[in-house]
Length: 328
Ligand code: KG4
Ligand code: ZN
Image (cartoon, rainbow, N blue to C red; front, top):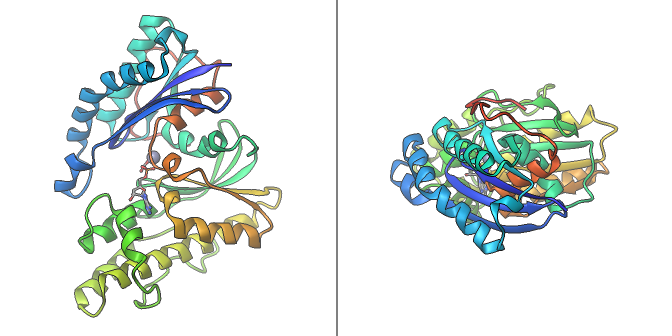
């Protein structure tokens, strides 16, 4: 059995986890920076980098102590090396390099998107390649075909905002605070999803790409009209977003006849309405549906450690760079 230490610092969660090759999350800690960024209504890169720098080392010590494990007992140290806010990524990657060098342990530089993409396999060992993946987070909105480790084919992306970004902007417009996704979901529970007529951008297009900027503008106009309740706008937005996602996926799945599993990952995959709609879509296509538990959907280090487990044997050079952009 192998054990990997994972470090995640690409956005506003500082996270450390120990995961073994039997899919056990042996220990993990996550420190959210929501309180630091909330006054600004979004993540401030400089504040994020400083917070990661302050918290990471004590959290690594803490996770090892929680597990009663010495760093030398780890078979590899895996850290997010991009994409993300570069200051934060550097804090995590440089820390991992120092630990790897000091203990002569292999370093594995992980693409954060690969962490999300493989997270369903940490949650459920029966999920095998190939699978269709909807990756929906604050920074990304993609449909991928996952044929194996490192074998990702992107079939669709967004031409403007990511889905999580659309939730965050809607929350901001409606005065629901930050982070926006969970707030919109909570308020939408009290609203009528048919109350506000909102557009479904791209629906009907033959290419499976996404667009959410027009939906966000329509939310702003609906709010400014003064005609609608906040909860009704939130619920109608959420439904419009879900309709866009299922329509786009339907197009993408039409070209993947040999794939029998649909997987969703990334922060927005924590949304119950999104999950329910995808489950139905998968059933309509005779496909199996898999979504990691919500805590593995939003940013965490267990998925980074798990990607490290999948990549065991790799040993990246100590001069490897942090990458603000790094497509899968
Ligand atoms: O994967 P993630 O934690 O970070 C990135 O890599 O971006 O995703 C964060 C995004 C944010 O936009 C957040 O508002 C959204 O995921 N999100 C949600 C929910 N929980 C998080 N969106 C809708 N419903 C949720 N329950
Ligand atoms: Zn993420």
